[in-house]
Amino acid sequence: MSKFDLKYLEKLAKLMTDSDLTEVQLEDEEQSIILKRQQQQALVAQPVAPVVQAQVTAKDSTGVAQATEIKAETPKTGRPIKSPMVGTFYKAASPDAPAFVEVGSLVAQGEVVCIIEAMKLMNEIESDYSGKVIEICVNDGQPVEYGQVLMYVE
Image (cartoon, rainbow, N blue to C red; front, side, top):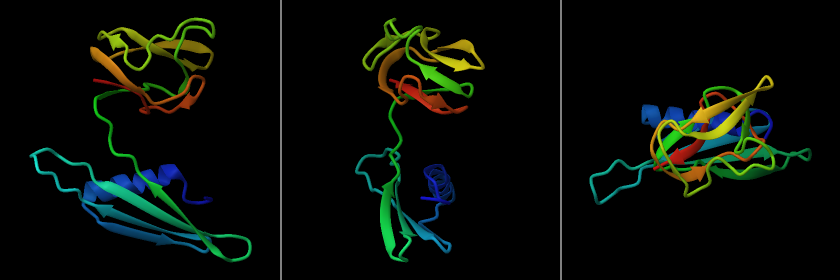
């Protein structure tokens, strides 16, 4: 995809959810995008996350349209621990040290769960909650953005 990257599609999906739109269609010379939202019905009285699908049609060098389908993930359960800064995520204090936490680890509020390196400074990130780590969303050494979910605690 050239113009319409995944972050752009995620923003469009959020806009659709926030404004109760059910369909959005965008098109330029190279590709077209159709976003459709389907509401799921639940038998119990719980909020249900909408399913958002995106279909991207890009024209290759021969002018033939090629479709790609992208499905937005449903929100995760648990409470997110988000990155307070831009930097590089590390799950351990050094390459040969054990990880601060793994999926299934129990953490206490204030316990260090990872490190974010920013401008050669190692910043310890502490859990905002006590609970069990149910998902780690980034890989060791991966760059992270401000506000990006690092892991979920249940």
